[in-house]
Image (cartoon, rainbow, N blue to C red; front, side, top):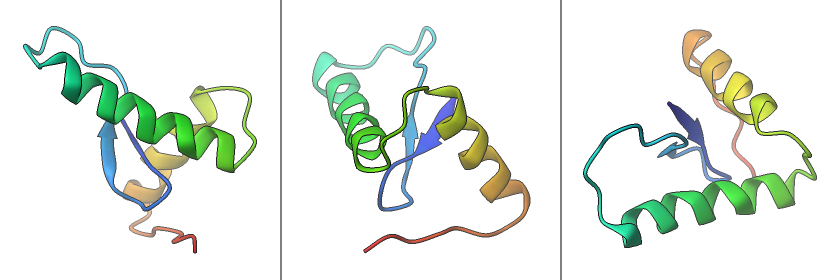
Length: 64
């Protein structure tokens, strides 16, 4: 499962059984946490939904 961060870059939201280093997991988690704080969201599902819809509709909202 993925989601986009504040810069529009795809980040792992759920890593499943991927054998990734803890530093990589922490990096992706931190980037998504920053987006959540920046947009003042309380739930993760809205970030995932917005990310999926942006790809399916071929648009991306960039933030400054």
